[in-house]
Length: 328
Image (cartoon, rainbow, N blue to C red; front, top):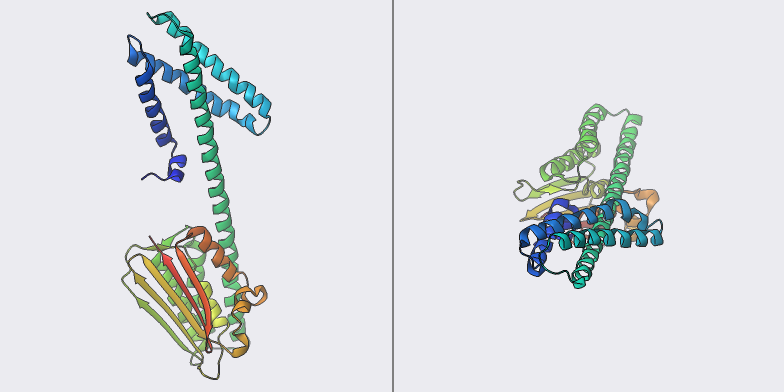
């Protein structure tokens, strides 16, 4: 089945369907000795009227409706007159005024349909442009967000004059290379995104050493699946950022990815102290969490409408995020 959005974006398909439909109508209603030639002539006149209307007259629709209406009537009347003139001149049958009325009515319908289709296409293109601009802005916000958080960690190690700093810098360069150069497309191979997560978690393991239990688990066979870049990293970042101890649970971060058919189930949980277990605060506090979480929520709505589920919860000293994506 052809989706409406696809139809309005494909001009060639539009033209083929519209003119084929009109050709069939005319073949059924035109009664002349040379029907095929007459129908072809009428289609040429209709095409000239439609393209003049869409290219020259339609821009006046938003500027001055009265001028638009006058030009619309003049355009349709002129080309109807041209058709009638040649039909009278070359037709062997007696001319009836009902032919003029029928042709004029049909031409007006064709012109109105052309206007509606062009306006629908322009509206969809405008929405797509706005959507792409918003996604680019969100990506542009995300890279500095990641860099800021990582540089904070590196700064802490540099103050302590840690021997881990050179290795962390190398890991960071790999992460930055991906976030700056490999995430320009709306979707990237899932295997690259997973590698990115693994590298980030490896960086955190070096930084934290034995201070926390850090586990990454991957379940499923990855082939050609694609995913919007840097969706999951925000939750992993926040897991380490808000990592803490509770009376019941030792510091830990558990990241899990499961691939089932075309469905990806991502979960991330971290221990935290009781004072930080306010889920609403963790999700909405721009000062502490930056733009990351809200950024991801907006991107999910834009890229995976009705194809995602995001659940953020707290449970006995654990902060848990579960994201389910339909990758199909």
